[in-house]
Amino acid sequence: MPIYEYRCDACGTAFEELVFGETKVACPRCRTPKVTRQLSVPAPARSSGMNGSDCAVGLPQSSCCGGTCHQH
Image 1: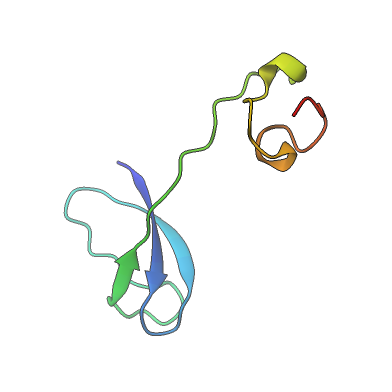
Image 2: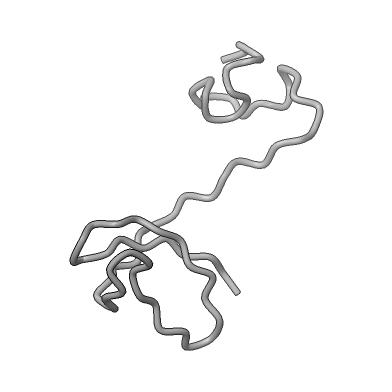
């Protein structure tokens, strides 16, 4: 049951949808079924400790820790 990101071809609304099997996806704003699935980038893995060693090397500060570790 993955969550996919979509963009409506008619009104441009971006939205996410939890898809079960052959679920027909429609825009939540204008209800058209003319939508395009977008490429999604998975979020980086984070631990709960958020110290300098928890951040992924090479990512912008705002990408992994909200800029709080400043170890980049």
